[in-house]
Image (cartoon, rainbow, N blue to C red; front, side, top):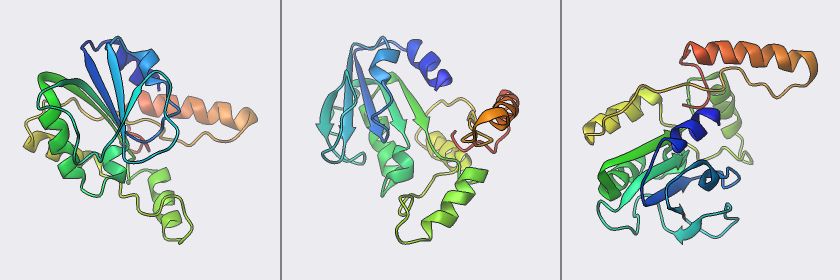
Length: 186
């Protein structure tokens, strides 16, 4: 999350909207934007420091061109209509607004494992349809977003312990530094 906190620290504005998953990340503490609003489709835990609005990502309850920053954490991965969610993000962003899009890379090692897991009926990954970085770039260009190249993170899963974890973390850092397109988060 270091890249996310650096990117958020560089952004200014009055309103930021958080979409998607992972309320455990304390995004409000990473930004200088004045008001942070978490938009979510249903009841559940809310992250700290943010107002909460119940809404679908495909039907955001904000005025056109009223939001300075949108952070979409896996919002496209879990959306029933990810292209419509991007259109809504485009609608609510100010002309010089910023979108930070974080998603799962279906072509990564972890993405492949999750596809295999999702075939099981009890899997928590069932129903998640990751949008590839290439497809997301195409959609962003169709909606006239100026976008940076995707940055790939978490190339090597490092959930082990001990010496192996250190070796895997160093390998992952090297692969991330060279932006190897196999990272499970983009």
